Image 1 (cartoon, rainbow, N blue to C red):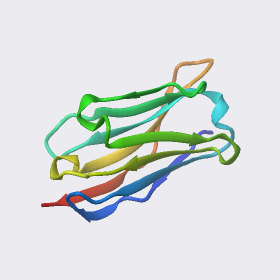
Image 2 (cartoon, rainbow, N blue to C red):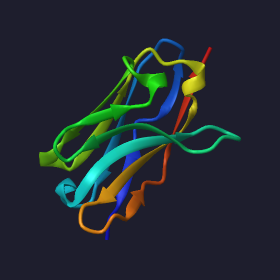
Image 3 (cartoon, helix red, strand yellow):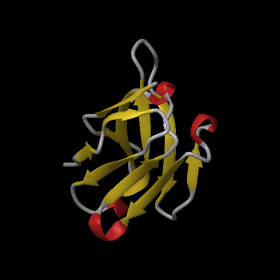
Image 4 (cartoon, rainbow, N blue to C red):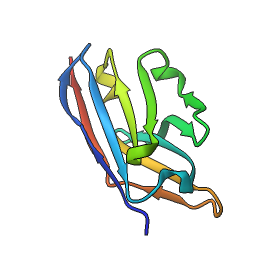
Amino acid sequence: QVRLVESGGGLVQAGGSLRLTCAASGSIFRFDSMGWYRQAPGKQRELVATITSGGTTNYVDAVKGRFTISRDNANNTVYLQMNSLKPEDTAVYYCNAVGRVIKIMYWGQGTQVTVSS
């Protein structure tokens, strides 16, 4: 059974930083890729950043240069470092993982990020 647990959300002023953590149950090498999505009130869930098992990263244009996704294979953890936060980054952030053999998507429960102006 796959379990993804996010932490690190909170309230921060515009221009501030937060680091989100996604802890996976078991080895993250089971996954073809992992990533972060977010969903703001009244909006669809959107991709923020992904990282493959080989370390290739991808970002949505809105966060390029501000957010950094990384992984710690030894600790089965993926991070999202968020700098220069803006009010429009306010959302629930979800950790995501895609199975390597069977392309099932797994989700965490989400963590709230609120950026005040």
